Length: 124
Length: 107
Image (cartoon, rainbow over all chains, first blue to last red; front, side, top):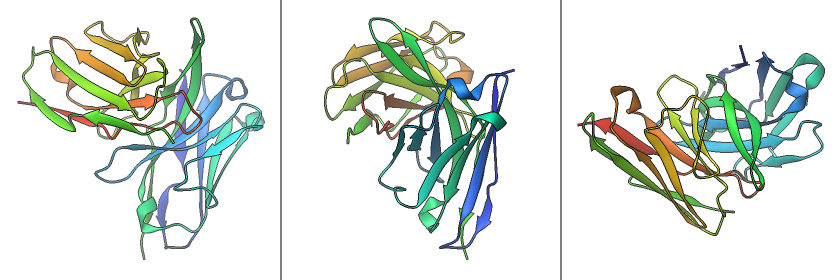
């Protein structure tokens, strides 16, 4: 079964670090670009970060740029999100998602596999 | 950055109704537009990609249309399992923004 499972969430104090992991199974992670997305309580989905299959290209949302670092270890079939200088507004459920493509007259990309998320709470 | 705006933010409907959700991009994104369904405590689910292509396994009562800046998701003959929050997302530029979501509730 194709699956993504996030882990590493928990309670962290403001200003502290936390590292999230995303374990892929049922497919070869190295063949796919990946994303992190979050949902704060009562809010919608917020795209956070993208990493290409070889880690050569990385993007961040402005809200996390300079504080969060995305990385991957294809040999371990794992994706990571290292978070620093956490704030109360970073409290959310964090999801990893696979970036797949369909070819029509162009390549169309979409998030077709998602994990169930891991909860991060930033509070003193 | 491309902003995605959905309307309405919420709506109520009966089982069996037809509903339409609108998504507007702040600039043209051609047809690089995806739709997702999200239920509490579950992983988001891809419904539509490339504005109108139905993801494998998604019921045909879901359809998408549009191009440029204006897009719609239509659900015909609402089923109880369709009550959820729906999001559009642009895949045109490298900051892959979502709309703010539309919560579909049972009337």
